[in-house]
Length: 301
Image (tube, rainbow, N blue to C red; front, side, top):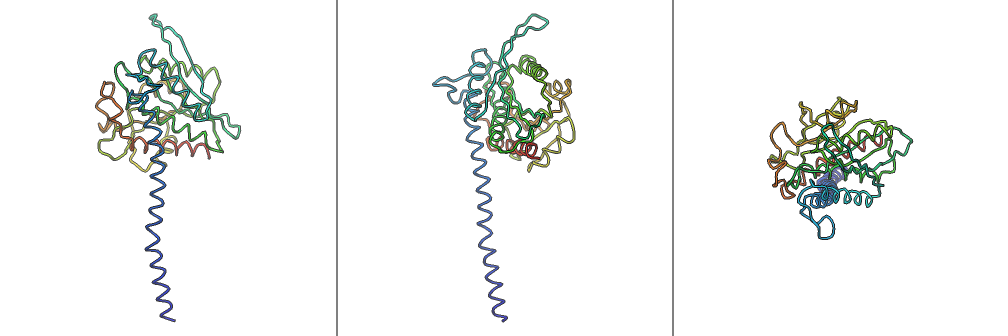
Protein backbone atom coordinates (compact mmCIF):
# COMPACT_ATOMS: atom_id res chain seq x y z
CA UNK A 1 0.00 0.00 0.00
CA UNK A 2 2.84 2.38 0.90
CA UNK A 3 4.57 1.58 -2.39
CA UNK A 4 1.35 2.40 -4.25
CA UNK A 5 1.06 5.73 -2.46
CA UNK A 6 4.67 6.60 -3.21
CA UNK A 7 4.28 5.71 -6.87
CA UNK A 8 1.07 7.73 -7.08
CA UNK A 9 2.78 10.71 -5.47
CA UNK A 10 5.75 10.46 -7.84
CA UNK A 11 3.46 10.22 -10.85
CA UNK A 12 1.48 13.26 -9.72
CA UNK A 13 4.66 15.24 -9.09
CA UNK A 14 6.01 14.29 -12.51
CA UNK A 15 2.75 15.37 -14.14
CA UNK A 16 2.91 18.76 -12.42
CA UNK A 17 6.58 19.32 -13.25
CA UNK A 18 6.20 18.31 -16.89
CA UNK A 19 2.81 19.90 -17.41
CA UNK A 20 3.64 23.32 -15.96
CA UNK A 21 6.01 24.44 -18.72
CA UNK A 22 3.42 23.58 -21.34
CA UNK A 23 0.84 25.73 -19.55
CA UNK A 24 3.27 28.63 -19.26
CA UNK A 25 4.33 28.31 -22.88
CA UNK A 26 0.70 28.23 -24.01
CA UNK A 27 -0.12 31.35 -22.02
CA UNK A 28 2.97 33.14 -23.27
CA UNK A 29 2.15 32.13 -26.83
CA UNK A 30 -1.31 33.71 -26.57
CA UNK A 31 0.24 36.94 -25.33
CA UNK A 32 2.82 36.92 -28.11
CA UNK A 33 0.17 36.31 -30.76
CA UNK A 34 -1.94 39.21 -29.50
CA UNK A 35 1.07 41.53 -29.37
CA UNK A 36 2.12 40.51 -32.88
CA UNK A 37 -1.38 41.26 -34.20
CA UNK A 38 -1.35 44.75 -32.70
CA UNK A 39 2.16 45.48 -33.95
CA UNK A 40 1.42 44.30 -37.50
CA UNK A 41 -1.60 46.59 -37.77
CA UNK A 42 0.09 49.55 -36.16
CA UNK A 43 3.31 49.28 -38.18
CA UNK A 44 1.30 49.74 -41.35
CA UNK A 45 -0.69 52.69 -40.00
CA UNK A 46 2.33 54.53 -38.57
CA UNK A 47 4.38 53.65 -41.65
CA UNK A 48 1.85 55.16 -44.05
CA UNK A 49 1.15 58.23 -41.92
CA UNK A 50 4.85 59.06 -41.66
CA UNK A 51 5.93 58.49 -45.25
CA UNK A 52 7.84 55.33 -44.38
CA UNK A 53 5.40 53.40 -46.59
CA UNK A 54 3.33 54.60 -49.57
CA UNK A 55 -0.05 55.83 -48.40
CA UNK A 56 -1.72 55.38 -51.80
CA UNK A 57 -0.22 53.64 -54.82
CA UNK A 58 3.38 54.85 -54.86
CA UNK A 59 2.51 58.15 -53.19
CA UNK A 60 4.20 58.95 -49.87
CA UNK A 61 3.80 61.99 -47.66
CA UNK A 62 6.43 64.10 -45.90
CA UNK A 63 4.20 65.39 -43.12
CA UNK A 64 0.52 65.80 -42.39
CA UNK A 65 0.51 69.56 -42.51
CA UNK A 66 -0.45 70.87 -45.94
CA UNK A 67 -4.02 70.84 -47.18
CA UNK A 68 -3.25 68.21 -49.82
CA UNK A 69 -1.42 65.90 -47.40
CA UNK A 70 -4.12 66.16 -44.76
CA UNK A 71 -6.80 65.39 -47.33
CA UNK A 72 -4.85 62.34 -48.47
CA UNK A 73 -4.60 61.17 -44.86
CA UNK A 74 -8.31 61.79 -44.22
CA UNK A 75 -9.16 59.61 -47.22
CA UNK A 76 -6.77 56.91 -46.04
CA UNK A 77 -8.31 56.86 -42.55
CA UNK A 78 -11.79 56.60 -44.02
CA UNK A 79 -10.73 53.65 -46.14
CA UNK A 80 -9.15 51.92 -43.12
CA UNK A 81 -12.30 52.36 -41.04
CA UNK A 82 -14.45 51.02 -43.88
CA UNK A 83 -12.16 48.02 -44.27
CA UNK A 84 -12.55 47.37 -40.53
CA UNK A 85 -16.32 47.15 -41.06
CA UNK A 86 -17.16 50.63 -39.80
CA UNK A 87 -19.12 53.37 -41.55
CA UNK A 88 -16.65 56.23 -41.87
CA UNK A 89 -18.01 59.77 -41.89
CA UNK A 90 -16.55 63.20 -42.52
CA UNK A 91 -17.00 66.23 -40.30
CA UNK A 92 -15.85 68.90 -42.74
CA UNK A 93 -15.62 72.57 -41.86
CA UNK A 94 -14.70 75.94 -43.32
CA UNK A 95 -14.59 78.58 -40.61
CA UNK A 96 -13.12 82.00 -39.99
CA UNK A 97 -11.76 83.30 -36.70
CA UNK A 98 -12.03 86.81 -35.28
CA UNK A 99 -8.81 87.84 -37.00
CA UNK A 100 -10.10 86.78 -40.40
CA UNK A 101 -8.04 83.60 -40.66
CA UNK A 102 -9.88 80.86 -42.57
CA UNK A 103 -9.55 77.20 -41.62
CA UNK A 104 -10.72 74.27 -43.70
CA UNK A 105 -10.38 70.66 -42.71
CA UNK A 106 -11.90 67.27 -42.12
CA UNK A 107 -12.39 65.26 -38.97
CA UNK A 108 -12.88 61.57 -39.74
CA UNK A 109 -15.09 59.53 -37.40
CA UNK A 110 -17.17 56.39 -37.08
CA UNK A 111 -19.88 55.30 -34.67
CA UNK A 112 -19.81 51.84 -33.08
CA UNK A 113 -23.35 51.42 -31.78
CA UNK A 114 -24.38 49.83 -28.51
CA UNK A 115 -26.23 46.55 -28.74
CA UNK A 116 -28.48 47.24 -25.74
CA UNK A 117 -30.01 50.59 -26.70
CA UNK A 118 -27.74 52.70 -24.47
CA UNK A 119 -27.67 56.44 -25.11
CA UNK A 120 -24.17 56.90 -23.63
CA UNK A 121 -21.18 57.52 -25.89
CA UNK A 122 -17.49 56.95 -25.21
CA UNK A 123 -15.24 58.87 -27.58
CA UNK A 124 -11.80 57.54 -28.50
CA UNK A 125 -9.71 60.15 -30.28
CA UNK A 126 -6.38 61.34 -31.63
CA UNK A 127 -5.29 64.19 -33.89
CA UNK A 128 -3.74 63.21 -37.20
CA UNK A 129 -2.07 66.42 -38.42
CA UNK A 130 1.52 67.50 -37.77
CA UNK A 131 3.64 70.60 -37.73
CA UNK A 132 5.31 71.49 -41.03
CA UNK A 133 8.14 69.18 -42.17
CA UNK A 134 7.64 66.66 -39.36
CA UNK A 135 6.67 63.06 -40.18
CA UNK A 136 4.90 63.05 -36.79
CA UNK A 137 5.49 59.46 -35.73
CA UNK A 138 5.31 59.81 -31.95
CA UNK A 139 3.32 63.01 -32.34
CA UNK A 140 0.80 61.69 -33.26
CA UNK A 141 0.65 58.79 -35.70
CA UNK A 142 0.95 56.48 -32.70
CA UNK A 143 -2.15 58.01 -31.10
CA UNK A 144 -4.06 57.39 -34.33
CA UNK A 145 -2.82 53.78 -34.31
CA UNK A 146 -4.06 53.24 -30.74
CA UNK A 147 -7.50 54.68 -31.50
CA UNK A 148 -7.85 52.72 -34.75
CA UNK A 149 -6.91 49.34 -33.32
CA UNK A 150 -9.21 49.82 -30.32
CA UNK A 151 -12.14 50.77 -32.56
CA UNK A 152 -11.49 47.84 -34.89
CA UNK A 153 -11.64 45.35 -32.02
CA UNK A 154 -14.67 46.99 -30.39
CA UNK A 155 -16.56 46.64 -33.66
CA UNK A 156 -15.96 42.87 -33.51
CA UNK A 157 -17.70 42.48 -30.13
CA UNK A 158 -21.07 40.78 -30.05
CA UNK A 159 -22.11 42.84 -27.01
CA UNK A 160 -21.58 46.55 -26.36
CA UNK A 161 -23.37 48.20 -23.47
CA UNK A 162 -22.30 51.66 -24.60
CA UNK A 163 -21.94 53.45 -27.91
CA UNK A 164 -18.41 54.24 -29.04
CA UNK A 165 -17.12 56.85 -31.44
CA UNK A 166 -13.62 56.86 -32.86
CA UNK A 167 -12.54 60.25 -34.22
CA UNK A 168 -9.37 61.51 -35.85
CA UNK A 169 -9.10 65.28 -35.40
CA UNK A 170 -7.73 67.60 -38.06
CA UNK A 171 -5.77 70.82 -37.41
CA UNK A 172 -4.58 70.27 -33.85
CA UNK A 173 -1.75 72.65 -34.68
CA UNK A 174 -4.17 75.40 -35.67
CA UNK A 175 -5.50 76.16 -32.20
CA UNK A 176 -7.47 72.90 -32.01
CA UNK A 177 -9.78 73.94 -34.82
CA UNK A 178 -10.71 70.36 -35.71
CA UNK A 179 -11.44 69.52 -32.08
CA UNK A 180 -13.59 72.63 -31.72
CA UNK A 181 -15.60 71.70 -34.80
CA UNK A 182 -16.19 68.18 -33.55
CA UNK A 183 -17.38 69.47 -30.19
CA UNK A 184 -19.87 71.55 -32.15
CA UNK A 185 -21.02 68.39 -33.96
CA UNK A 186 -21.47 66.59 -30.63
CA UNK A 187 -23.73 69.40 -29.46
CA UNK A 188 -25.71 69.33 -32.69
CA UNK A 189 -26.14 65.55 -32.54
CA UNK A 190 -27.09 65.66 -28.87
CA UNK A 191 -24.77 62.80 -28.00
CA UNK A 192 -24.74 61.95 -24.31
CA UNK A 193 -20.98 61.71 -23.77
CA UNK A 194 -19.82 59.43 -20.97
CA UNK A 195 -16.15 60.31 -21.45
CA UNK A 196 -13.51 61.25 -24.02
CA UNK A 197 -10.24 59.31 -24.25
CA UNK A 198 -7.18 60.37 -26.22
CA UNK A 199 -3.55 59.35 -26.64
CA UNK A 200 -0.58 61.47 -27.66
CA UNK A 201 3.24 61.38 -27.55
CA UNK A 202 3.22 57.57 -27.44
CA UNK A 203 5.89 55.27 -28.85
CA UNK A 204 9.10 56.22 -27.04
CA UNK A 205 10.22 54.12 -24.07
CA UNK A 206 13.93 54.63 -23.49
CA UNK A 207 14.01 52.86 -20.10
CA UNK A 208 11.81 50.02 -21.43
CA UNK A 209 9.48 49.93 -18.42
CA UNK A 210 6.41 50.46 -20.65
CA UNK A 211 5.10 53.01 -18.14
CA UNK A 212 2.52 55.59 -19.16
CA UNK A 213 1.39 58.92 -17.83
CA UNK A 214 -2.28 59.65 -17.26
CA UNK A 215 -4.33 62.80 -16.86
CA UNK A 216 -7.91 62.12 -15.80
CA UNK A 217 -10.79 64.41 -14.91
CA UNK A 218 -12.08 62.06 -12.19
CA UNK A 219 -10.92 59.21 -9.99
CA UNK A 220 -13.30 56.68 -11.53
CA UNK A 221 -11.78 57.07 -14.99
CA UNK A 222 -8.29 56.96 -13.56
CA UNK A 223 -9.10 53.78 -11.66
CA UNK A 224 -10.39 52.08 -14.81
CA UNK A 225 -6.92 52.37 -16.33
CA UNK A 226 -5.05 51.40 -13.19
CA UNK A 227 -7.15 48.23 -12.87
CA UNK A 228 -6.27 47.15 -16.42
CA UNK A 229 -2.62 48.21 -16.41
CA UNK A 230 0.20 45.73 -15.70
CA UNK A 231 2.73 48.59 -16.02
CA UNK A 232 3.39 51.71 -13.91
CA UNK A 233 0.98 54.61 -14.39
CA UNK A 234 2.19 58.06 -13.37
CA UNK A 235 -0.36 60.74 -12.67
CA UNK A 236 0.05 63.85 -14.77
CA UNK A 237 -0.54 67.04 -12.82
CA UNK A 238 -0.43 69.61 -15.65
CA UNK A 239 -3.38 69.85 -18.02
CA UNK A 240 -2.89 69.51 -21.77
CA UNK A 241 -4.73 71.99 -24.09
CA UNK A 242 -7.19 69.41 -25.45
CA UNK A 243 -8.04 68.23 -21.94
CA UNK A 244 -8.71 71.76 -20.76
CA UNK A 245 -10.82 72.34 -23.85
CA UNK A 246 -12.97 69.24 -23.26
CA UNK A 247 -13.31 70.14 -19.58
CA UNK A 248 -14.54 73.63 -20.47
CA UNK A 249 -17.51 71.98 -22.15
CA UNK A 250 -18.16 69.74 -19.16
CA UNK A 251 -16.79 66.48 -20.60
CA UNK A 252 -15.01 63.88 -18.50
CA UNK A 253 -11.66 63.11 -20.11
CA UNK A 254 -8.59 60.88 -20.05
CA UNK A 255 -5.30 61.71 -21.75
CA UNK A 256 -2.55 59.11 -22.08
CA UNK A 257 1.05 60.01 -22.89
CA UNK A 258 4.53 58.58 -22.50
CA UNK A 259 6.42 59.56 -19.36
CA UNK A 260 6.57 63.29 -19.98
CA UNK A 261 6.94 63.85 -16.25
CA UNK A 262 9.99 61.57 -16.07
CA UNK A 263 11.48 62.87 -19.33
CA UNK A 264 11.12 59.48 -21.02
CA UNK A 265 9.66 60.98 -24.17
CA UNK A 266 10.90 61.30 -27.73
CA UNK A 267 13.46 64.12 -28.18
CA UNK A 268 12.32 64.42 -31.80
CA UNK A 269 8.72 65.60 -31.27
CA UNK A 270 7.69 68.28 -33.79
CA UNK A 271 10.98 67.83 -35.68
CA UNK A 272 11.94 66.21 -38.98
CA UNK A 273 13.44 63.28 -37.06
CA UNK A 274 10.10 62.25 -35.50
CA UNK A 275 10.21 59.23 -37.80
CA UNK A 276 8.76 55.72 -38.02
CA UNK A 277 12.16 54.26 -37.12
CA UNK A 278 12.10 55.91 -33.67
CA UNK A 279 8.86 54.21 -32.57
CA UNK A 280 9.01 51.40 -30.01
CA UNK A 281 6.18 49.24 -31.32
CA UNK A 282 6.23 46.84 -28.39
CA UNK A 283 5.62 49.77 -26.06
CA UNK A 284 2.90 51.08 -28.36
CA UNK A 285 1.24 47.64 -28.37
CA UNK A 286 1.42 47.46 -24.58
CA UNK A 287 -0.35 50.81 -24.21
CA UNK A 288 -2.88 49.86 -26.87
CA UNK A 289 -3.82 46.71 -25.02
CA UNK A 290 -4.44 48.71 -21.84
CA UNK A 291 -6.75 51.11 -23.68
CA UNK A 292 -8.56 48.25 -25.37
CA UNK A 293 -9.08 46.37 -22.10
CA UNK A 294 -10.50 49.51 -20.49
CA UNK A 295 -12.96 49.88 -23.36
CA UNK A 296 -13.88 46.18 -23.17
CA UNK A 297 -14.72 46.70 -19.49
CA UNK A 298 -16.98 49.64 -20.38
CA UNK A 299 -18.57 47.69 -23.22
CA UNK A 300 -19.40 44.59 -21.21
CA UNK A 301 -20.22 45.94 -17.73
